[in-house]
Structure formats: structure tokens, C-alpha cells
Image (cartoon, rainbow over the protein chains, first blue to last red):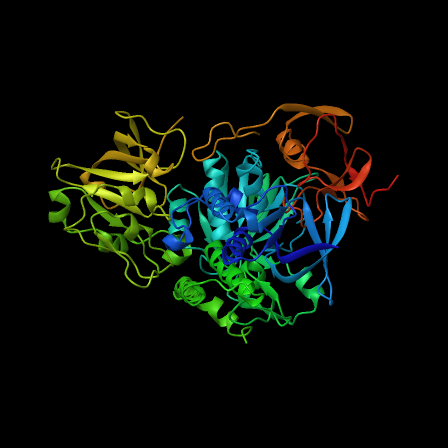
Length: 360
Length: 162
Length: 101
């Protein structure tokens, strides 16, 4: 069995920040990442981040990965990294199992674990929603921003939250036409500055619309959209058929919570946090002692919040297993303050309403 | 309507513009940030203390037009690309407008391009005076165009025909 | 379908490599995934569903949803959206659940 002090599952923004924070506190950290490289979804975020300087605001997500890796390198004597390795099991006795490159399977018994597995894209139900050409908006972002491949020629974006708006803009930057952005809600869900910058490129944003049906033989050729009434029912006679060879589904993310469910910690379905999330304390420790969480797994938010949660969980997990940072109290206060700043405006209201139901 | 379409009304736009007197004195930032979001890099980026967000980073930024020099640093730093600079000091019938523009091809200095409004509709042809894209702007170039004064409140974007 | 000029990104593609898709030779680049290389070549249908044999493309592109499973070098159920392309790979659409040889 492999020895480890603190295991961090997932090396996206939350996991990397947790690792920096814990390693700088003196804990021996083992990062386990299923991908071949670190950074999670930061590697496709070509846009500048919001927030304040402490959350790397105004820096592009693609560059934040490098900033975090440089920071992590300062504590390299405390850090071990396993890529191409998937944590596939978490057991009652605290043992976790790892599959490396689909051929090496081994056990680890750490003193503490921080689960930072993130979230995945939801799907939307409508006839023929399984046609090739209908992709998650994040998937299209990966295809074009990581691999430099266009998803198609004409894109219909479904969902006007931040991801839908940002990916629409990035599609245009890649030279792809966005036919329209639609959203079932009566209002645009994402930041209006994002909406405005797309609107002034001439792309219509249709609120109160949904996809009635996708049309195509082997892959998407057309999409039928229609208006919704105030009870979200389709209004007959309002159908429009749009030519599109790509449809991006951007109807929200939901936490990747399988490992936590398996571990047996208490979980709750909280709509405001976009799915089933762990009950936790202020330190981001779940109802299982020494099992911590950070990032979208504890409730879907912006990556800026995920990074601060990572710093906080890393600090607290390290302290819990005997590596209390010198300026622990100050750091903790600072992270809590940053989180409260990020959530204090109107966009944070529903997040706070969700968090209220899971923090003990 | 703004929350349905992403298009601010002319009243909302006018409210963000400084007085004509100020515009006619020289370049000044117009911060089109209408809704509270947790974000303050405009304040951090400004070397002249001309943009104030304050303690709560969700506050709407306020421009101190006396301090603003129209340097356009904030244009490239605003993650929402919500800022432009307007300068009415150069002529009576034209204004100079600086906008962020993150698309290819970039316009060429001296050439005419299509001027668009906040809906992406064609307004008028505008002349490109300057294309600034230094390293410090981090891949958000700032384009200076000359716009007929009557379109000052409507102009917001350009289209470069390939 | 490849992006050549981009205002923010530079694509430093790896070495050009050849592989086959259902017997047909296709070029891709080292460092990209099988699904990315196929999409760049215009291939969207990666398999057929289990019962109704409906066409399947990728959906999440980060290894979560299993919509992109294909037979690669004779091995079924390979997540092509996260598996790197290798010179000479034999890639085939997967019909249904695939058979382990």
C-alpha cells in the first residue's frame, strides 16, 4: 500500500490551490489527477477572470494554470503528482483505490483527503438530443481552445448562463458563426457584460425559448426552436427552424459526487448549488473526519470561488493533521472574507441560500 | 428589457456618459457596467485613481472624470470588455472612440470599417486611427476610431470585412 | 475544420501522424485526442447506440459521459475524447457495447 499524508483528488483550480495551501503549511501532499496534465478546465478558459486581484482577476484562465503551477513548485519537496490516475474508490476504512493508466491498480491510506473533482455538464431532454453535433458547451470549448478544431460552421447555443455566453464569444473568436443563443428562463442568467459583448456582435439572445426538436440523419442539420409561456410550456405556432450543424448545450453543471457518495459522508440535494453536495463545516470538512472538499463538488460556482475554497480547505486539512500554518488564523480569515466578497452581491444570493442548508 | 436582450437602453447608456463639456475637454472612460457582479480589476488597473469600486467588489464602478486621462489601460483589463474611451476635444463634428477588440483580422490604421451599435447593427463607416496591442494589454487590442458625433451614444463596435 | 489564426491562442501542434478510421487513412497531430483528430477530419459519428443503433458522437469531451466510446487497436470502449492519438492507431466505430477479444 502506498503511503501518503494528504491526498488531493483532482488538479483543477480548487485542487491546485488546495495543494499549494497544504504544502506551504508543511503537509506532504499527493495530487491524483485522471488527466495527463494539470489545470482541469482552466486550460480552455481563454477569457479574463472576474473577481479581485487575489483570485487572479483580469488574468486569462489559460494563464492561471501556469501561475498556480509556479507557486506549487516552490513547495515541491512536499508535493508528489500522479497524472493519468483515477481515484476509483473511497472506502469506510479510509482507504482509497487508484487506477493508473487503466493497468495499474493500487491502494492508498492517507491521513486526510480533499476531494476536488469538479462538475460535469448537464444534458437537456428533447427529441433527437443524442444526435452527433449536439455537444456540451464546455466540450466545444475544449475542442476549439485546447485542440484548435472548429466544432462546425453554424452553432446554436442553448443556455445564456456564463458558460453559454462565454463559449459563444469564443466560438466567434475561432471564426465560427453563432446563429443564436436561447434560454428557457425569462432573463439572461449570465453576467450582462458578457451578454452585451455578444449582442453587439449581432448575435440574438432569445430568452423564453427552448429547443423543440433536433433534426438530422446521422448528425445535426437543423434545430426547431419555440417560445415558452411563463409556466415554461411550449407555445404552439411559435416554432422556427434554424440551420445549424452544431448545438451547444449549456444548461448548467452538476457536481461530480460519485466518490463522496461512495465514502458515505452525508449528502444533500441543494438546487441552488446545482446538485447533490456534501454537508460540511466552515473548514470544508465533510461529516467524515479528515475528508474535505473544495470547488464545484461542494456547489457549482465560478472558478474564482473554487480557488479560494481550495486555499481554505488545504489550509484547514493540513492543520487538522498536524501542519498548522504559522499565520493560520490570518489566512483563514482572509479566505473566508474573499469568499464572502465573491458571494455578497446579487449573483451570490442563491449560492448563499444553498450554503446555508449544508454548513454545520 | 436589458436583462432579456443584453442591449442597454439609450437612457442607461447616457447615464454612463460624462457631460459633453467633459468629453470635449479630452479623452475619458465610459464604464458600461450596469449590474452588480463581484469584480474590480478596473479599479486595480487605474494608475490615476479614476475608477472606484470600493470595499465591496460587487459595487458598480464609478469614474472620477477629473482624474481620468483616457489612457485606456482599463479597456484591456476589464474582463467584461465593458469600457470605452470617448474624446470630443479633436473636432466639432467627430469624436474619437477607443474600444477593445479581440477578433481577427485586426483593422488597419487609416482604413474605413463598419461601425456598429449595441445590437450589432450597422450605423456608419468609421475611420481607424490607431491599433494598440502591446504586451501589457494581454491580447486585448484597443482600437481608436473616428466617429461622426451624431453617433457618439450609439456606436459601440466595429466590423472588419475580410 | 482546424483553426489557423486565433486572436488569443497559438496552436503549437505536434508532429503529423497517420492513423486509420474504419480502414481509411487519416492524418492527425501528436498530442491531440482521437476524437479531436476525427472531428478535424469531419468525422462526427463515433459509434452506434446499444439497442436502437442510433449514431453517437462525443458529448462532454472530458472523459465523463461515455458517448465517445470506440474500438481502438481492437480494444472496445476506449474513451476517444481523452485518449491520445498514436501513429498507426486502428480506430473503428463501435456498434453497441463492443466485444472484448
